[in-house]
Amino acid sequence: MLNNVSAPQSLKRVRTSDDDLAELADRLPGFGGFYYDGEQRLNVWLKDPGRRGEAEIKVADLLRRRTGRARERAESNAARVQGMRVRQAQYDFRQLLTWYRGHVLPNVMRLEGITMTDIDERVNRIRVGVANESYLVPTRRLLGRLPIPPAAIEVIVEAEGQPDTRRAESVYGGMTSTGFLHVTVVDALGVERTASLLIDYDPEAQLYCM
Image (cartoon, rainbow, N blue to C red; front, side, top):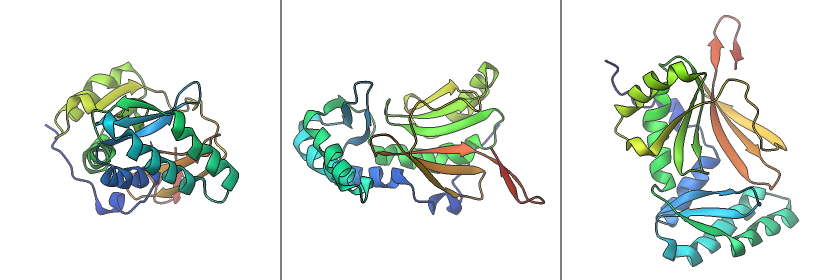
């Protein structure tokens, strides 16, 4: 039987845009993240929809800061909060990030067939991708033993090399010693998205292979 493994310190030292969302959840209790839908409308997850006014101010501030020096784009993105759609969240982002880094990442590394992991803001859930259907059951079995609500994690088939539909304008990331590459992309709207991709490290060749 596989036991729950705690996250190594190296994982906790890698800062990504997820940290910005978790810190916003600390300042805005119940904030579960945000995303743009197919109509490019901003959708914001809140456990308490009554905090919409507060969310508009704080999400707009985060969008301005994330866009960086592109001031015109920053103001354009921030203005999108006026027409944002509030969705009922089940989990706040701090909860998701704590579960993700503390339990999901260090445990899925021990399984075969893992192709990606992410906190998916489109569904207010943690998502784990596997290479094909044969890996669904063992992956769900392991994740089911973790101290995380089962409904907070989705396991899906996502083959390696499956293209991302988001248009990336720039990419940067931080390497950890755990076998995951944390990659942040800035999409066409100037919003950062972060995912963790499983990698293999060859210590002799000193190469990382996706």
